[in-house]
Structures are given as structure tokens and as C-alpha cells.
Image (cartoon, rainbow, N blue to C red; front, top):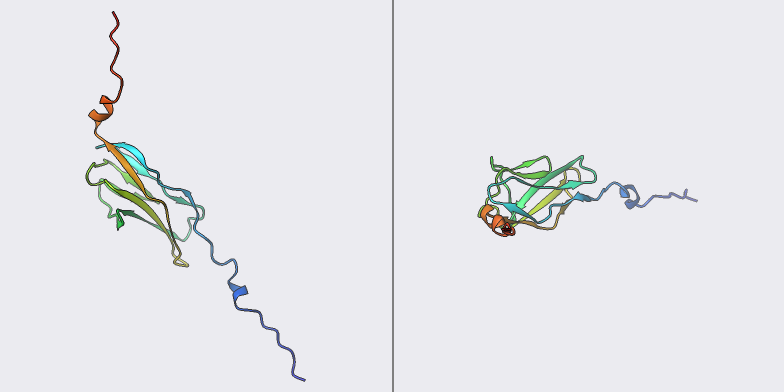
Amino acid sequence: PAPCVTSFPAFLSAVGTRARILFTKEPSSQDALHGRSAILRCEVEEPSGVEFEWLHNGLSVQDTERRFQEGSNLQFTAVDRQQDAGSFQCVARSTVTGEEARTANASFNIKCEYESRASEPAPSLSS
């Protein structure tokens, strides 16, 4: 009789080779003052082999002196009421598997400095 040949299913060799991208820090919506600095944070559990991209209203953010990616975070030297309106999202992509993960959207509630002062209680005058 012919020898019995046992072959392992191909799927066994792929088990455990695909690590999921898990965020440890995601950007959150926050108050910001027009013209002041701010940062949106984005970090993953296993950053090696992961590249980051930031989206603003669904479009890739291009680095400028005012707004740029620093590591995996998005840094703002001066938040702008018009240019930074809308939503920001961090995209993490594995350079090995091509797997992609996206954070929830975050946005700024941008106020002018005089608005934040106006909301402070007026000093009380005591005689």
C-alpha cells in the first residue's frame, strides 16, 4: 500500500502572524484658544512597523510651520479658527501587513481670547 502522507492545512502557518493595531492614546475633542498651541495625541500599543497619517475633514494633513506631525502626534503652534475647523482623525498603518486602523474623529472648540474672558465671572466690588 502507498504510504500515508499527512499535510497540515495552510492556515496553521498564518496563525499569530498578524498583529492587530491597538490604540493606547486617541485624539479627543477639546477647547482651544485661537492663536495658541495645542496637540492631538495618537499612540499605538506596538509602534514598530507602523506609520501614522492625520486626516482633517477626510483629507491628508500637509505639514506647515503652524500645523505639523511630530512623531505620531499632530502639533499646532497656533490653532486657527477657520483653518482648523472640522474633524481630525489619526490613521495608523502597518508597513508589513498594510492593515489600517482609524481613531474616532476629534475636533477643537476654538474660542477667541476675549470670549474666554467674557465667560469668567466679573470681579465683585465690595465696599
